[in-house]
Length: 517
Image 1 (spheres, one colour):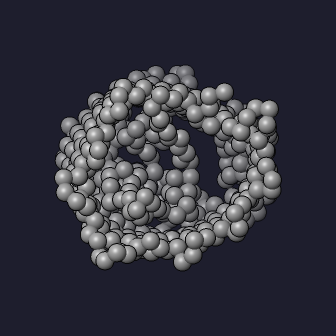
Image 2: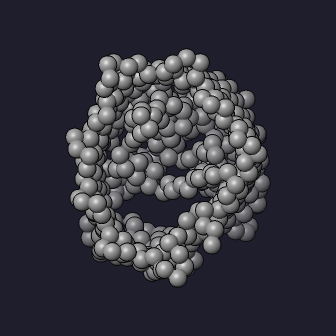
Image 3: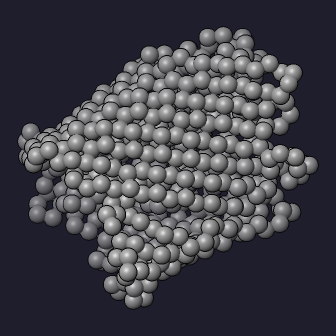
C-alpha cells in the first residue's frame, strides 16, 4: 500500500523545506546544498565554487527556480508548458503551470520589506505498461500548491539580515488507480519562519548564523471503488527547529592568493525523532584564475509524514517513532580554472556515504515484529568535468561529463555516465541555442521502502537534442521576445521498444520576472 501514499510526499515537494520520495542520496544532496555555507563563499566578487550543470540535472532533473528581489519593483511571471515525452513503457502526458512574483518596498537606506508568492499546478497521465493491455481509463497524478511569504530585511554596512515567515499548502492526488484502489487524495500544510544574520567583526572574517522553524501536517483520503470502504487518515504535526552557525576567514597569501578555511554546524531538533547535527568544513585556495577546494559535510533527512500514515493503516504500531535520521557524509575535492579570459574549466571528485535509510516490512525481510527500521547503506563515488569556451564576443560552446560509481546495484536513476554539450550565440538580433545530453542506461522507479524490494525495470540510454531561436520584437521593447523551442529525443524503454519522438508546444512569448511594460 506504500505507493498510494506518494501524494502526501509529493505534495510536500512544493514546500520550502521539502521532503521527497527519492533515493536517500538524492534527499541528502538536497539537504547538503541547503546547509553548506562554505560552498557559497564568494572571492573577489565571484563564486569560488559553482557546481557543473551535469550533476545538477542528474540529481534534480525536475528542478527549476525563479528568484529575484529588487526593492521598489513589482514583478510577475506566468508560463505554461506541455510536453509529450517518450518514457518507459508508453508515452506520458504532463501539463505544468507556474506563476510567481515578488513585491517589495524600500523603507529607507537600511530596511526593506518584500512579499513573494508562488503557485504551481501539474497533471501527469500514464497509460501503463506497453507489455500489458491498455487500461480503459489512464491513471492520473495531479499536484497543486501555493506559497506566500513575507520578509523584513536590513543592511548596515557588513551586517546583513532577514526575517521571513511563510505559509505553504497543496494537494497531491492519484486518480483512477488500477484495480479497486480508486483515488487517493493527499493534502499538506507547511508553516514556518527563517531568520538569518551575516556580519563581520574583524578583517577577513565572516559569521553567518540563523534559525529555521517548520511545522508540517497533512492527511490522506482513500476513496476505493465499491464495495471497499473509504477512509481518511490524518498525520501528526511535525515540527523541525534548526539553528545554525558558520564562520569563514580570508587569509591573504601575498598579493595574488587567498586561503579561506570555513566551518559550521546545523543542529536539528525534531518533535518526533531524535535530534541530529550536520557539521561542515571547507578549505579553498584562490587566485584570479585558479581556485582549488576541498570540503567535508553531512546531510540529514528525517522520515516524512507517510511513516505515521502507513502505521495507521498497516500493523506497524508506533515503530515509526524509533526511526533515526538518514545521513549522508560527503567529501569532495576539485578546482576551477580560467587559463584564459575566454576559457573556464571545472573539475571535482566526490565520495558520498549514505546510511540509516529507513524501510518498513514484515519478517523475514526485517526482524520481528513488523516495523519501520533503519537498515539501508551504500557509497557513491563520482567525478564531474565541465568546460566553457567563448568564441569571439557573441558565441560560446560548453561541454560536461559526469561519471558515477555506486557500491550497490539497481540504484535508481544513477547513470554510470552522462555527457552534455552545446553552443550559444547570436546573429544580429537573433539568438540561437543548441544543446544535447546523453545519459547512460539506468534502473528506473524509486527503490521502494518496503523490506526486500528491488528494482527490475531498466531504461536504456538516450540522447536529447534541444534547439531554440529567439527574436526581440522592437514594437514591444527589448524585454519581450518571441521564441520557438523545437525538441527531439531518441529513447527506448526496452530493447524492442519503438523510438518515440518527444514533442513540445510550439512558439511562445517570454516575459522577464520584472517586466513593467
